[in-house]
Image 1 (cartoon, helix red, strand yellow):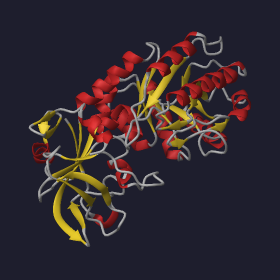
Image 2 (image 1 turned 180 degrees about the vertical axis):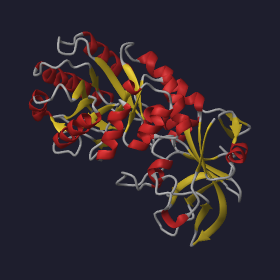
Image 3 (image 1 turned 180 degrees about the horizontal axis):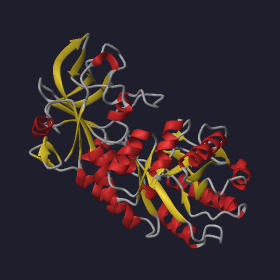
Length: 409
C-alpha cells in the first residue's frame, strides 16, 4: 500500500477492515445505486472542505464552485447552498447552475469559442460572461441590442505571467484563453455603455498546484496586474476573479497543500489594495479542491486471470468512466490514483496485481502494479480522490458499454 493511500485512509472511516463511504459499506452503496460501476459523492466531506476553507481564508474573500469539475445536478445544488457563486463552462452547465437556485448575478460563464446560442442564453439569463476574445465582444453587442438589454461581462485576461508547477497552465504566453493583458486597456476603452454592464476581470493562471509559494507568487502578480488594468480605465472594476489552482494529492510523493501561507498573503493583498480595486469583490473559483476528495469510483472484480506470471483483476469499470484515473487525461507518465479493496483494506497475504477494465484496448487500466490484499471474484475496487473530472470528463460512449451511475449521499 502506497504512503498516499495509507495517509488518505487515516482520514477515512473504517469498520472491521472495511471502508465506509457516507456511513455505508460498499455493497450497500452499490445496491442503492442499482449496480456497479458507480460514483459515490460524500455530501459531508464537501461540506467539511468548504467550511475548513472558509475558516482558513480571509473573511471578505468570496468562494465560487467551478461546475466543470463535477456538474452532477444534486452535487451542484448542494454546493450552491455552501458557496457564494458558481462558474460554468457551457450552456448545459449554466442551466444546471440556474436550476440550483443560485442568483444569476453570482453565476459566471467562462470558456473560449462560446457559440452564439450560448452567448444569447447567457445574456437572457443575466449571468456574467467572462469574455475571451474581441470578436466575442462584438457578438455580444449585437445580441444585447437584439434582446434590448445589457450584457453582464467581465474580461478574461491572459496574464503576462504563468503559474509555475501547475498541472495545467491556463495563462501566460500565447493562449486560447482570454484577451492578452497588453490588449485589455484598449478593449475597455471601446466598450459601449449601452451594450454592456461591465463587472470586472477574470485572471486565472493554472490549475492543480500543490506548491504554496507558486500560488503566493501568482496571487501577487494577479493583484498587481488587476490594479494596473483598473488604473488604466475609467470603468469601475467591481469584481476580480483570481481563479483557483489549489490542488489535491493524487500520487505517491505528493502532499496536501498547506493553506496558511496562501491565506496570510491573500489577507495582506486584500488589505493593501489601491484605489482601483478598493471596492472590488475578490473571488476565488475552485473545482477539484472542493469535491475531489469527496468522490469514490467503485467497480467490481468480475474475472481473475494469470498471464505469464502476472495476476490480473478484471473489473466492470474502466477508462470509459474514469479517464483521468486511466492515465489518459493529462498524464505524461501514468501513475496510480489511490486504490483499495473496499472490504479488505489491509491483509496478511498481499499480491501485486494489474487491475484492468472491460474495454478492448490496453489503455483501459484501473491500477498498474499495485500491491493489495489477495482479491476474490466479487470484491469491490474503490478508486479514491475521484470526485472531480470523473464521469463528465470520460468517454462514456466508447465501445458502447453501459454508463456509470452517480449518487450524492
